Amino acid sequence: MSDTPDPITITTRRADDGVVVSVAGELDLHSASALTDAVQRVLAEHPGETIALDASGLSFADSAGLRALLVAHGDAGERNVAFRVVRASEPLERLLEMTGLRELLCAPG
Image: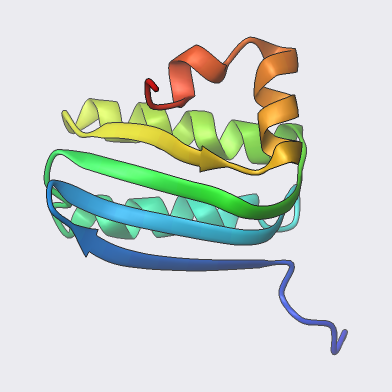
């Protein structure tokens, strides 16, 4: 058993038209399910019109993390809730650009 801290920190707060989910740390194979679970909890609590993801605190993101974002986007869409990355760290921004998913997942502007 490891005494290392969790690789990701996830917090949620209410906003005017929905919920802001903030993530910090590493979004990878070991932590992606934590984000998926957090979004599921938010959706179960009727978040309003949007879930805004503040990913400015991510120091790392890989394909498993990207998959978690796509799952969250799909799950939210099934409930007529918009899911958008509103702030992306440099590592996530690079991944979104490389995969061509920036337009799908990021808020305009």
